[in-house]
Length: 344
Length: 283
Ligand SMILES: Cc1cc2nc3c(=O)[nH]c(=O)nc-3n(C[C@H](O)[C@H](O)[C@H](O)COP(=O)(O)O)c2cc1C
Ligand code: FES
Image (cartoon, rainbow over all chains, first blue to last red):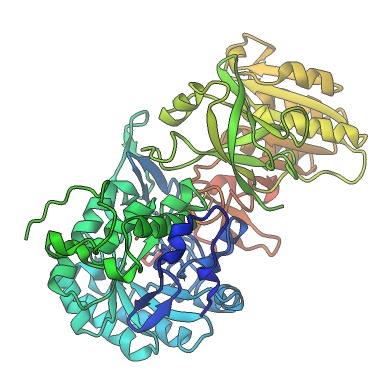
């Protein structure tokens, strides 16, 4: 594990230095709670042109499959209000090339890797987990179950608690590092799916993946995406992500959550921690600002300091507690804390 | 050359026919920028509802001078993002990332080149023509557009080239027709090499002509991009590698300039069945 993350970056807010950003996810310690998001940072190399990824908690790599995969036809992307739709179709080089090129690149630089895996059958996931097992740099697996299950007429694993649980149970047996199940918000009850995967052995949960949408091109009057539907991400989905995290954390407060969905500032990240996430991933915001993950980290540390907190860990789930228990004694008044609607 | 992100400042914006040409003080971007490189511009500030950058080919980049590093680009208003950009005024802040992509490759010898631009696709070709000339190349140009208002850089190109032809769809300027109507004549003057930038159908037609004449061509493509830096995989197109294998490659990092004979123009917008990792179709 790297300790570079504790070194202040230029232009740092001094007060933020008093905040201990270390984060523990299912027993693994990370230097801080800000990660990249799967599919939004490749495997870290490109972002390294802009900042040192070892300053982050870790890099969550693009979901990798057993074989090279070309992905879907273009156009694959449409910008929508405060967000975007994508239908990449999991384009990637396949696990062997990933293990040969990408994971070693991260390991050599001391960048903690969270490896995201994706399959078409429950067996694929087990094979992937077996292949990455014991590799240098690997700190955790994120299991992207928002994939069509070819053995169940293309039904997405994440939308079927039994299928999701079967995938996680297999990966859990094959893995020597913590296993996080990445959930889709496109379900009737996210708590039911969360419970199913935790019972199957998931150490933690990543929430949320994109939510399905459509955009119509008003010149051609046809769908903008070649695939018709795509996954919505960006600030537009942030309240949905916070709702999912809120509900799951309320039901299972002991299960660690890696939260994502529309985070582009430190205050956004703070909302996720308060709702129950122990750490966050910054995804779509990278496309608008290649420095976004590092900026979010710095802003989060300042925001914590200015609210009188001495660590990131102490705000995790704080929004679920009674109002007078939320702000530590002697803290500045929480001037710009958003008004909460506490409905339980 | 590593790209940088710069909080720049608009120096000037002016109308050029149907387009807008903008110059931005953005120190650091011009260092190492070469013809064919592009920049990605943030739209609407940090809380903007437009979360993606817009990519533009560089017209010119100056790494020093009174303003200490400027970049110039040209754009057409095509949506909310470019409409916002057209409303910027001198001194407004602008977030710029660049230089991005792979630029045009220059010949080692003083050859005879033809540059072919469609609409604002002429943008990167002016600086390219200048560099070719400084290497002793003869440069001819063909510029085309739907109307005269959509021609870009005709005056500058005329200064830099030995022979030049203009075509417009409506015949308002130059010859009525397409660039490919006059390109054979230009090539027959002894061209060794073609460079092209413009809409995809034009690039395909230019690629076919160059192939028919047995000369190499480099094309700069314009694909929809979400990130411009290689992390999102939205900007892909099918390209045949030197190993003969077709891959869906990222135009933002492996392009935007490609060798024309490697681009699978017939398959753009699709994933050809013989591409690496293409879905296996079972009947
Ligand atoms: C272009 C793009 C590609 C993505 N690829 C993946 C992927 O391969 N695996 C995955 O689990 N999530 C993927 N996601 C989802 C993100 O990791 C994240 O869960 C989601 O976008 C919400 O976070 P954001 O709003 O910060 O982007 C992708 C998102 C985008 C925009
Ligand atoms: S635009 Fe994101 S990879 Fe090319």
